[in-house]
Image (cartoon, rainbow over all chains, first blue to last red; front, side):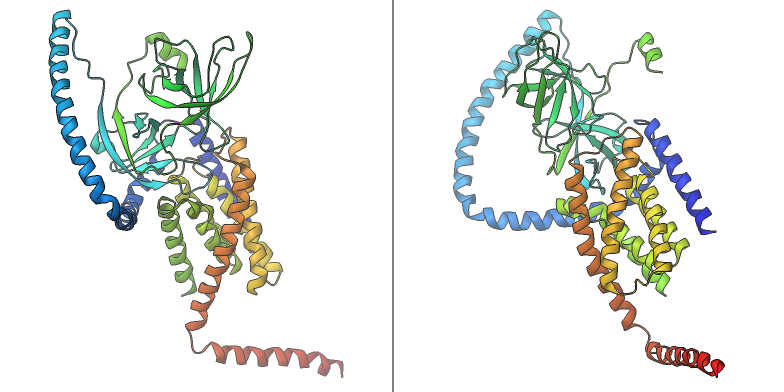
Length: 280
Length: 183
C-alpha cells in the first residue's frame, strides 16, 4: 500500500512541476489561493517585526535627531525657494507643450506595496507583496523600489501578489548601457549564480562599455517600460568584433533587504498580429 | 494524541517557514517542515509521513519562486526513505537521529536542485554554499526541536511507567521460554 501511495504522490508532484514549468507566467491557481491564505499570517508577523525593528532603530537614532531636525528645517526652506522656481518652469513647459500640440504623456501610475513575505525556499528569491487584483495589479506588471527595478509580478491573488526578482536566471529584460537614444550598447539582463549580480548579455564587442556606467531598461521586452534604472556596470570582460562583451551589473535596488516597493500599473503596448502568432 | 501533536507541529513549521525569512534572512537556511516530516517518518508511520511530505512541500512551493511540486516531490521521497530505514534500524536514540536529519536534508536539497535542473530552472546562489548552510542550520534546529517534542511526549501520561514495567516483564518471559523448551 505505502509504496503505491508514494508513487502516486510522486507522480502527482511531478505532473504539477511539469505543468508549472510549462505555464511560466500564466495564472497559477494553487499559488494564488495559498498566498491569499498565507496573507493572514504574513501580514501581522511583518507588521510586528517591522514595528519592533523600528522601535529599536528609533532609540538608536534619537541622539542625532535634534541636529538632523535643525538641518532639515534649513533644507526645507531652501527647497521651498527651489520649488517656486520649478513651478515657474513647469508652467512654462506646459505652455510650450500646448503650443507644440503635444499631449501630456502619463505612462503609468504607481501603487505602493509592502513586502510581507520572502521566498520560503532558500533556492529562489521571490517576494510576496500586500497588493493584489483588488488593487488593480495584473500579471507581469513591473515592480520598482527607490533604487531601481526589482522584478515583475508572476502570480496575482485578490489580496497579494508574488514577484520574481530580476536576479532570477529567467528574468530576461531588455537593457542598455547609458541612456536610451544616446547609446547603442543593447543587451539582455539575466540572473547569475550570485544573488547580487546580474549579467548583461549580447552587447556587441565593438561597442565601448566602461565600469561604473548605468544600465537602463529599453522597453523592448514587452514587460518593463523604457528608462528604468537597472544597475551599475561593475565588471567588463571585453569582447571582440565577433564576440560580445561579458558584462556584470550590480542591481541598483537593495533586493536583499527591501521592505517597501512600488508596482507600476503599466501595461505594455499590444503586440502586432504577426508577433502574437510567433509567440504561440 | 501523538498524531495531533505532530500535525500541529507541522502546521506551525509551515507557518514559520512562510514568515521567518522576512524577519531575518538566515532563517531561510532552516527547513522546518522537513524536520517535522522526518520526525513523523521516524515514528514508523510511513503513510502519514509521506502525506505530510507532500502537503508540507506543496505549502512551501506555493509561496516559492521555484516549481510547484518540487518540494512536495523531494519531501515525499525523503519521508519514505526515512520511514523505511526507521522500520529496519533502531533509531529511537536522539544521537542516532542527528545524522538522519542531516542526511535527509542533504538528500532533500539534492533532489530539489536536480529536479529544477531537469526541468530547465536554475536556482539562485551557490549550490554548495546553500546545501552546506541548510544542512547545518536544519540539523542543529532539528535536534533542538526533537528534544522539545520528546520532552512533550514524556511529560504527558503518568501510566507510561506502568506500561513499561509490564512490557519488560513480557520480555523476561520470552527470554525464559526457550530454555524451558530446551529442557
